[in-house]
Image 1 (cartoon, rainbow, N blue to C red):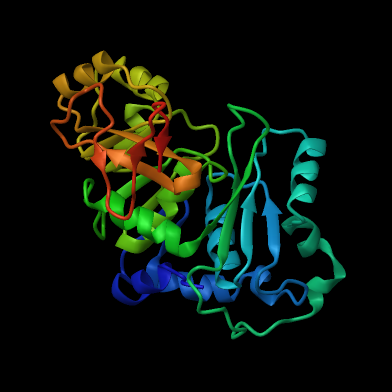
Image 2: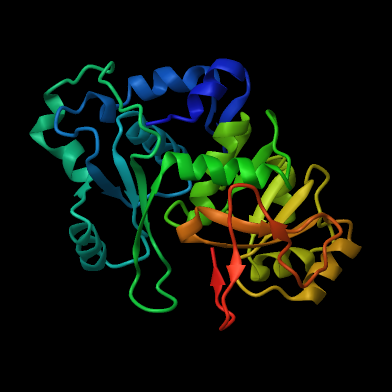
Length: 304
C-alpha cells in the first residue's frame, strides 16, 4: 500500500505536518512518532484488517490515521455524533473492530515489529467511510490509496498546494471532505492545521493559525463574511462545496477579495470532481479535474 506521507518525510522534513497552535510535529519527526505509537506495537491487527474509531480533528486522530495506514489497515472513521449503538451497528456491518477495544485488550502487551511489511499494491483497500445518507441508508464506500492520491493530484491542478502551505482541518475525518485534506497535505508537504476542540471557526482563529487554504460549506462562508475583518491576511484560497452553490454568496466573497473556488464532488469519487478557476462563473462548479471522467446521461443524470 502506498504511504503518501513517505515522500514528505523524505523531502519536507523541516516543514510541519500538523499544527493546532498547541501540538506540532514536523514531517521529519512523524516517522518516529508512528513507529513508537502503541498501534504499531499491536500483535492483534494485520494487514487488511478493518479498524474503526470515532476521530476528532486533533493530533491523536491525525497520528492514528497515518499509523493505521502504515500498518496496512483499512481505516474506518465513524461519526462520534452518533449514538453508541448506532456506531457499533455500523462497525459490525462492515466487520470492523474498534481501535479502543484493541488497545485495551491484553494483546496490547504482545509487541509486533515496526518493520512489519505493508503490501505494495496501491489498489488495495485503504479507507472506508460512510456516505451521508441523504438519499437513503448510509453506504459504506471503500477507497484504495491510489484513488485518494489521484484525487489530490487532480485537485492541485486548479488549487496549487505547496510545502509550507497550511490547510485548516475544519471538516470531520469521517467525511470525504475532511479525509481529503489529510491526503492533499501529505502529497504536497503542506501542514494540516487542526481546529482546537470547541474553537469557533472565525477570522481570529484563521489569522492566529496562519491558514492559507480553507474548505467550507455555504453556511460557514456566510458566517465568515458577516465578520468585518474577513478575510484574514494569510488566507489565499477558499474551497466551497457540500451543497448547491449560491452565486450571490460567491460574488459577495469575491468582492471582499476572497479567492473562492466552487466545487462539485462526492464520497464515491474521493472528493472533488470539478472545481472552478478564480474567475469562474459564481454559480457553476467549474471544470473537470484530471483523473476523472464525466458525462451526462440522456435523462440528465450525472455519471462519473
